[in-house]
Length: 257
Image (cartoon, rainbow, N blue to C red):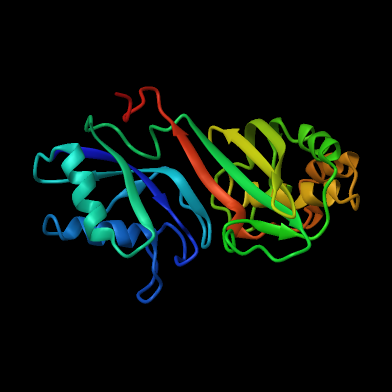
């Protein structure tokens, strides 16, 4: 059966997450599989590079699907987009890939971005797409706190107690933090990269760093929390609406060219 890689963008607000849920709980996976079943008889089961939580967005999620028909990738993407309406899900790119390609297990890296807006007035156009706080943050303090987390560490403190990963040890390749003008305030962007992430790791990190930027924590507090290897030592977990899966890396980019 021909295998296709799909690059998917979605607004996670209306969904209970990427992964298929119990009946009555909408998921992004279910929406894409339903669209596939309208093109070819199902059932279809697709695999994704990352199982984003409820309310989390993606600009470049990757999934793969096996189909009976030898589709032209461009036509397949167009047909899926037609059947995905009105769900806030779009197929940005589609490519035929080798049978041994796996969206999750072939991935060599993942990149997430988190948007945090500081302003007094409620956000309107970005409602549900950013985490809003009232007061501006100290960017230098944010970066100093983030530096304590880059590298290979036991991230027990920064993962959910429900995390199913075999080991809490991960290598965080980078955390870049930047500030950008925003109407009536300022937007802070946290860009994180690693081979893989633990459940709730990014949201736990951002929520903790926000406390540093606000002056409630110091960078040394972040180091001590990391070294505690205790979930209770973590700062607040940020809400999901500011988080985006923005990239997945493979040895060979399936969408190149």
